[in-house]
Image (cartoon, rainbow, N blue to C red; front, side, top):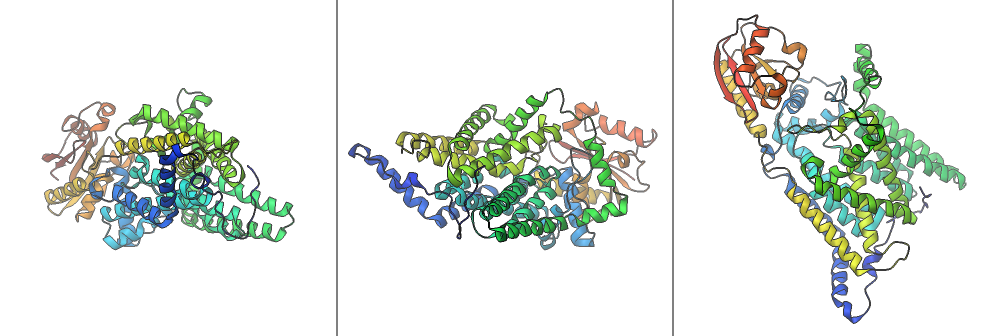
Length: 562
């Protein structure tokens, strides 16, 4: 990456030259008028930002309670938040990972705790907070792109971030990777500002935000080098230029940011000291396992991972729109490589930094995250590459601005290139709108789960409730939390070991059976699967069925008399 020139004021890395140079000739009056209109629009920074944030909010907030799914992961998170705000039980570990028998960081729960505390642990309020974080991610991405590429790049990046089906989905259900884009944007934006201004203090929030990314998903650790590398290069450049004072300030700011990020891991340290470093041993066991991502060779794994990482913020899950994904990823790669090669000055340096960040993270994830090679329909598919949402979108916005303004080797304004670029962005936006998540979750989301919890508590008549889930490897907390919130005295099976224990004596037994896994279980829900399970845990003396109903098209609930 090119060395970045240090200036004594905040820098907008490029000018919007493409909007300042007008087409010449009377036969280009229409182009002149369009150019003038666009220039006047983008000069109104606040108007553009408010419009983009308004669009992002409009896409995310309406009907929020029923938009996102509510299943085991969401029930688990809400139970932890309920115990935190109601009982004062401080979580030391975050949600379980899907890549090993260990956990993400507990900072995720503390991030959501204000909404849970103010609302009495109402999932709708937590969802609203998650949506607000998603809108904030749009604003911070706009700010970052504005710092690098000016008004046009900011407008494009903000618009794409606001309408991206992936970022809309990340804002409308409860899951630990969903706030990652906000903190990735903060880390990138603060790091860029620190690199291009005289203020080294920006390295503190940059490294702290990168630490939050790691807390939200353990594989966020591959994102941290992108921030530290830029900081180290800035310190080395300052030292070589003879400005040892600035080099020292950068070093101290990086250390301070890392120290603050380390404080986020204090709950984990407390747990490790009390458990004989259980999480560390489990993480090392995962790293030493033979998980190989299936039959794909390393090159194929890299291609699939790179394709998913780039395609996700542009069109969402690639299996939902393969043709759109191929087109969007191909164009984005071509434009990004073009800008990385031909870009000059800070904008070119930023393009190379972001492009290499995407490449580096994809290479490491292809090794550490073999589950990226598989997509499971009907379930939230891990997007722990969400910290690449912002680099991908900003790279595309920078490239589109550059090619439309003629900022290539010839520096020539080309009206046709501008028109083609505008049409391409418009098509991508229209495609994104068509790929937005459904306005209502097909399984009813939180309202259906809430009603099921009330119904179970009423059937139990005030006695204890033993909540189980099928298949047995799936946590029953998706139904357990609504039961607890409805006032039920519940014992909830959270793993395979607790799921095979005999029923709690004197308790109403409740089984939530997930039809998505009927092929795995070998029996359908609604009777056969439950009967086989009961025969296993009751030694052939199953309890009497009291009531059976469908929580949703996917989940059957069976209630058995104590």
